[in-house]
Image 1: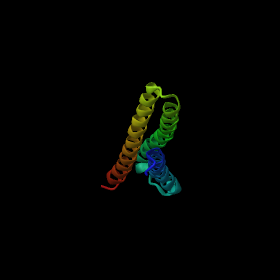
Image 2 (image 1 turned 90 degrees about the horizontal axis):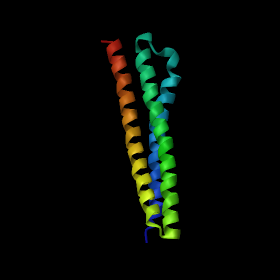
Image 3 (image 1 turned 90 degrees about the vertical axis):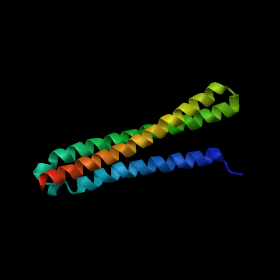
Amino acid sequence: MVDYRQESIENARGAIKTVTLLNGGAAVALLTQLSTIPAPVAGAVLTSMIWWSVGLALAACAWVAAFLSTRYVDKWMDEKNDQHRITSNTAQITGIVMILLSIVTFLVGSLFLAAGFHGAYS
């Protein structure tokens, strides 16, 4: 039989790792090239870094939401208090929204960077 609680934990962990890698990897990759970035692109670089930083912050907050969701599922199972189940579901939905927003921040940051290069060389 499938342990849905464990599956949910693994899926949340994977999603959080993914958006952390997307946003953090983009920022680190850009930082390694900072000395070679032309001045006309500097504004786009800064804007992209801000978007990716927000994405990392959302990933960290999603981890907190995942922790709370798991904790309140445990409390619900132990205490049979339906309010704990509602709190768990709310935390889970909040975490999912944060993951999706983190993906959006990666895309927006990448588009700002691409637009900066396009504007500088067109």
